[in-house]
Amino acid sequence: MKAMQIRQPAVSGLFYPDDPTLLGLNIDGMLEDVQDLRISGTPVAVVSPHAGYAYSGPTAATAYAALRQRRFSTAVIISPSHREYFHGISVYDGDAYRTPLGLVNVDVELRGKLLEHRGIIKASELGHRDEHAVEVQVPFLQRINPDVKILPIVMGDQRPDYCRVLGQVLADILRDRDAVMIASSDLSHFHGQEDAKELDAIAARHIREGQPNKLLEDLENHQCEACGGGPIAAVMTAASLLGADRSAVLHQCTSGDVTGDTTRVVGYLSAVFTRSGMTS
Image (cartoon, rainbow, N blue to C red; front, side, top):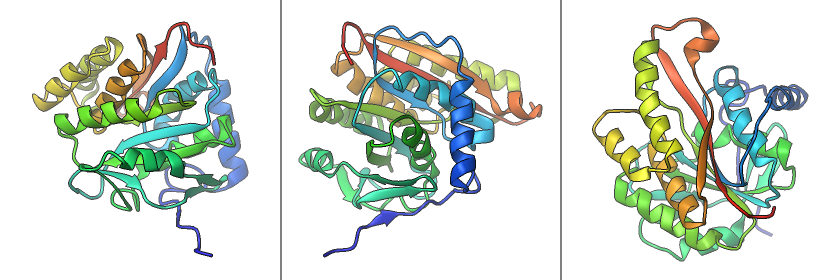
């Protein structure tokens, strides 16, 4: 029998606790701290940041508190590639991701459906080996849905055409499935607090108004910043095609709000895209 191909954690003990008990308590505490979260409709997708939990964990927790309001068996996680550039889009070709909380299996059947759309989407380890932007989402999923499967996707190239293609393909393969999507992204990087808030307000407006093309245009023109702008646009496109008719920014802050150092901050945002009249 072929041995399982398991993606081992790369940032455990750095971005989040490597002790499973402490990690579980950390995530549960952040989820419990989410207050007065009112979601209109049933979540189809969320945006969640991917910094260390000490900085962006509370913002991410609001996205996962929203996802708790829906039953789902698979989470499709789309992230940028911070450590290696490659052409196209990489879906993990292995069997599972490991975190301190255990293994999370890849939805192999759904991956097969995705790979029917050949071309820019390929199965590989590219972008997955050391990438934190997928990894930090997985423990949150394990706490809210212990039996979840994942489909980890990393965009090596975030050009607008690729974002639109990925969004359309995801909508095709997720129709009538009990799956949700997660776009992993931070916002502006290393500006002063006030400049960061101005840049992030532009990205937030496009997300809130459900305008992926305007988001991509302003990212291209440097009117706003998001390292995972492509994943956000792809998820927004797919969510709309899957019937999502409402979007809301759930939480927004910067690293300066946590550390008190407002000279060079990173922006964080969580958002949800929902469909009206859908039963979970």
